[in-house]
Image (cartoon, rainbow, N blue to C red; front, side):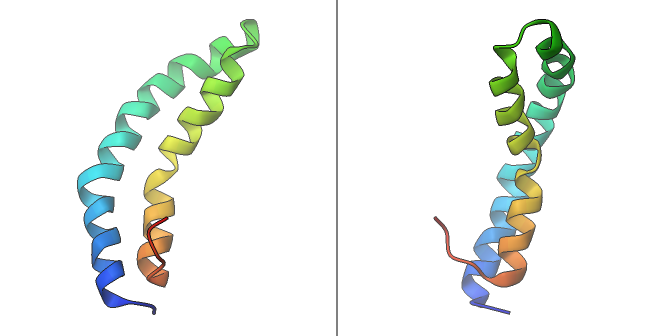
Length: 70
């Protein structure tokens, strides 16, 4: 495990920010992703929303490794 202080900061980001962001973006992603088949320019937006949905996973990885905040 890395730096304990950074792990605690990542935990706080995970709990108070990333779950809310992922929850909001998941709803939009469910709507936008099927539409991106019919409207190709929406593919980029769908990719961004997918990254936002995966944000809690990123935070959890950083929390466990004690990684720095970019």
